[in-house]
Image (cartoon, rainbow, N blue to C red):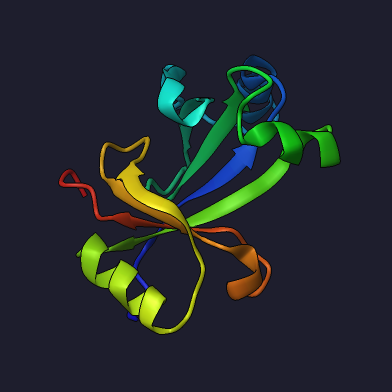
Length: 140
């Protein structure tokens, strides 16, 4: 596996509007996307661009109590780092490589917030970090 570019760090938050205010007011973010719902994944998402433009912070909050984030936020009421996402040129080849290495893939490959195919690898197989593998977006 060739490690691709770190596309974003996912940060879970109980309140996406409060998190946006933090990133604007405290961290000086000037480019924050409009939040949008991803009902199939049970989350509301927005992206904060870092000043160099190379990496984003993905703010994610649960849509309701059935969201996969609910358990994370019960253990971490203030929120916090949820996952890291790395790009790969070919999602199918990357998935096959991880599976061949015996890594536990969490669920099917699906379309992520950037509109590209993604899958997640269990933190116990990734040195303690939930890891999103995503196909490189066409827009770079």
